[in-house]
Length: 235
Ligand SMILES: *Cc1c(COP(=O)(O)O)cnc(C)c1O
Image 1: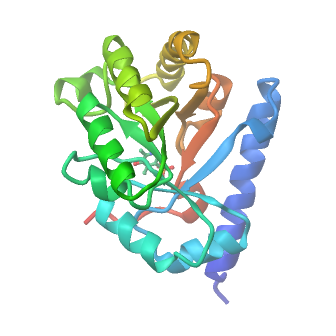
Image 2: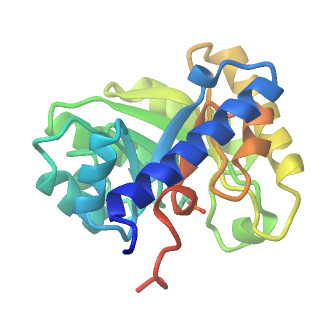
């Protein structure tokens, strides 16, 4: 008989939690210093109900429309909603209606639009600045702000009113050395913390490389497929 979806998710979750525990222990850190954000993009709301039942409270989505629908459908459950995808500034005010934490603030304009949305919906948002770790993506204007612009975005977030600057986020380049990328992110984090002591969190690491990220100081790992299985090809 095939495994139930609940069993499948429970075993993926147990495995990832154990990998986090070992990576943290190996780095001389407490496993409780690392928040597991389960990235649920493409998976149905029913999977989020199972995750909730298995003790998960932090979930991540990367597309506004899908995230908005799931947040509405699951409004009866206590989740912390993490938005991890690129924020189109015309969607930012809507994202502020349901997201608790945005990992991907990548411009002053996006910060301003999120703040306007937070104001409109009488909410507050935790914000990570997405820092570019991939020169190839930077050339295409994607993947976050370059290190030199972090200060401008940090200032915009800190002075906006309804946004709290909590740290930096990075996505390691696919075909390059994640260890080096996460070391760079850690350096950027240290410079930011020197100016904004409460912005001490680091969102880094996905299914393939979260151990390396934890060794480099990640406090939030964003893990999808290692918990939920291989996603179908993106629509
Ligand atoms: C999809 C996604 C993840 C999770 O990726 P997996 O490889 O499935 O763990 C993490 N971060 C971001 C920004 C994503 O879009």
